[in-house]
Image (cartoon, rainbow, N blue to C red; front, side, top):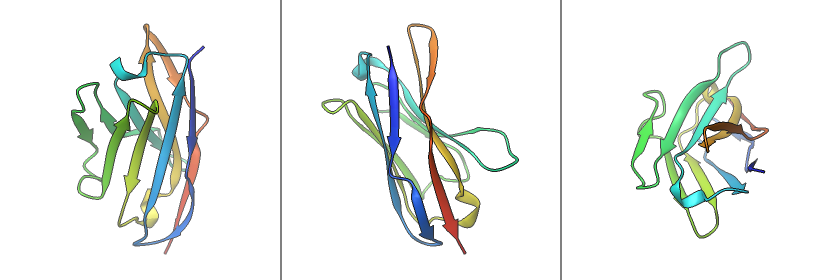
Length: 115
């Protein structure tokens, strides 16, 4: 059974930084594209960043230049380094992957950015 467990969320002031982690189990982590999504109150869930097994990355325009996605295949973990945080980055952040044609989501970690 695939499990994705996020950690690292919290309360931070605008301009600050946080690093999110997503630990994966029950899958061959190194072959999978991994992604971070977020959902702000009253808004739809949106893609924040993704990273392929070849470490090609993709970012939403709103976070490009501020966020960095990376992975450590030895630890089965994907990270999201978030710098220069803004109040509009406040959301629940979810880890996501597709494995053997099934969608898997973590339970999410809350990031709150105060102004």
